[in-house]
Every structure is written in C-alpha cells, then in structure tokens.
Figure 1 (cartoon, rainbow, N blue to C red):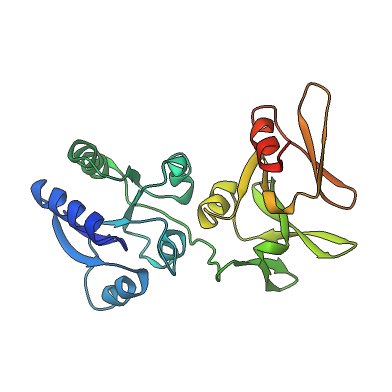
Figure 2: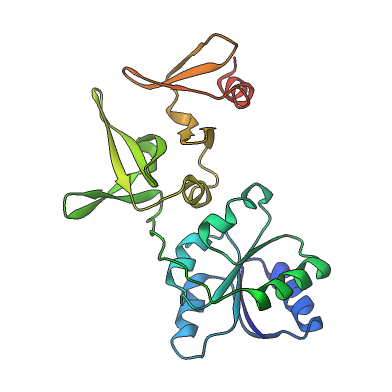
Length: 241
C-alpha cells in the first residue's frame, strides 16, 4: 500500500510516517499544505490512501478533499475529537484522532483493504469565511458573519442570511449535511441546537425561557429558534444566563 500525508504539523507527519513504515506502508509523499500536494498529483501516480488533517491554515481538509482524485481513499487525521461522528458525512474512508496509535492505524489499514473503491462526490469549496449559495442560474458568496443559522430541509442545507435591518432570507447552499458546515467552520461558534438546526451563536439577539425550562433564541426580527433541552444549558452559559 502507498500513502500520502497532508498535515501542517511536522511532528504529526513524522509520527505518522514512522508508524506507516513500521506497518509496511510506503509513504510516497508528505506535504504541509494542500496546494503543494495537489501540484504533486499532476506529475505522479495516485497513492492508495491520503492521510489528511482537517484543520490547517489556508485550505481546510474539506476544501482539499474536493480536489483530490475520487478514486483515492481519504483518512482524516485530526486533534478535534468532536468531529469523529461527522467524518463519514464528508465521505472519508476512516478517521484517526491525534496522537495516532499504532494499533488504531493498523485497524484502519485493515479496513481500507476491505472497502470498495470510494465514490466521493465533489464538496462545495468555501472562500475564507464566505460560502456559495444558489441564486437563479448562478452563485453568490455569503459571508458567514451575515448568517444567523443553517437548517436542513429535504436533504439540502439552507442558510438564513441577514440582508439588512428588515431583511432575513434563506438561500440554498451546496452542502447537504450540517456536518459539512460544522467541519468547514470549526472555530466559528456554530452549535447544533436541533437535529436540523445549526446556530451561529454570535447571531443571538435575545432569549426567553419556554415551558419545561427550554430556551428560545431570537436571531432576527420575528425569528425565534427553539433550543433542544440537552443544548439549553450550553446556550444559557454562552449568553450569561
């Protein structure tokens, strides 16, 4: 088996390369960022698997995976354990938590041997804190700071955007799961308040307590979102309530 490593942390790359070598896996490329790795692909044959960090300066793992060959297995390697459940929504073959252990890596390699060829679909690219939404026959890029929340409806993710003092409108994004949004904007204060609702906490304008102790938050004029009972304590803490 041949492997490629993309990770901006030198020590993480060194550890993973050593463990792969010990497990008889040939590391054919090692890069600190996505652009260099993608340039390498233009002149070399594909490896069998790419070990890819999710959170890196510049292009994120989500942006990089969209550009990788679709016949390539991708294993996310990251320190963010809260995204373990979401990794498979990004159509990765497996997920490893740093620091990677030899036993877990061995199980990952065994699993890759049994998987059918990957059939990843192309992921939507984001530009900085902006993301594309569909408008007519084209696309408009929306700044995350203008977004109050995301919701899933009919297997599509819709973004609710504050257009002005009295304008609050939703747009269809190129994502189809909230997990993809969460992974793209890891440090942007997004919290899942319902299975189908992802709130940008900085957009909260007010809050009130509902029957049973749950919370309702106001994000725009006339727009309130109910928070699940399990997440209510976290939102109250954020709001200082």
